Image (tube, rainbow, N blue to C red):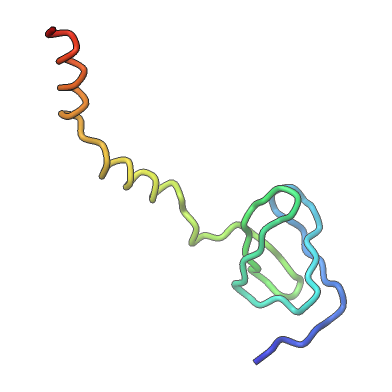
Length: 86
């Protein structure tokens, strides 16, 4: 079902306070990117229209898991020590 077009609706970016314009009625939970600062924010309230950083986006945990999975202490220590054995 298509969302009907409405007049210009604005909400404030929580990161830089820039006005973000919507030219259709936003949906609760919709993600938008601020054109000023580039923050990815979520529509968290429709009346009044409110944007906030999403609680579901947590890049720090993903980064930590990737780091732990790809880092092998023994491999790096062995390579380092071999250069001094020669």
